[in-house]
Structures are given as structure tokens and as C-alpha cells.
Amino acid sequence: MNINAVKDAMPPEEESHHDHGHDFASVVEFLLGKPDYFSIDGFEEYYSSQERKMLAELQRKLDIPGSGE
Image 1 (cartoon, rainbow, N blue to C red):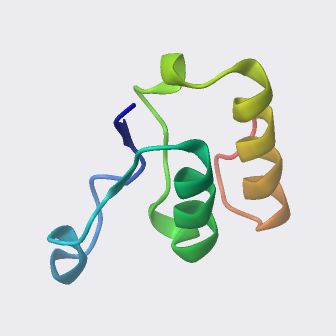
Image 2: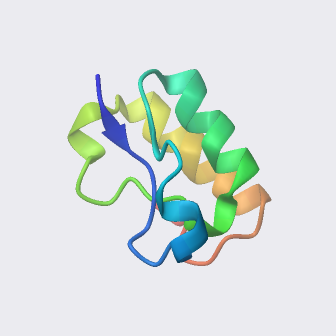
């Protein structure tokens, strides 16, 4: 599965880097590594309810605005 996990506002110097995860572990790794640029908006259908809840909880613990579910 090809999941976009980056907000459109990513700084230009970061745009050329690998910006999506191919498995859930990669998505979590990206969230933890670049929490300010993480979003699954528009790709929620690719995640199970449990995965969405886990991502929301990680965002909440990292204190990321807009991380409520």
C-alpha cells in the first residue's frame, strides 16, 4: 500500500525525500521523526480504525495540533 504521510507545507529542502510509507511501521516512523509534517488527511480509508486511533493517540502525546479524532 502506498500511503501519503506528508502535509503539503513540507519545506522545499525536504520535498525530494521519500515522503510516504509502504507499511504501517513506516508511517509511525515518519510520524515520530517529522511530527509537524505528518497527516493522513485524504488517505484515512487506507488505515484500519485501530491504526487511525493509534496515530491520533501518538499525535496527541506528541502534542500536535489538530490530532483529535
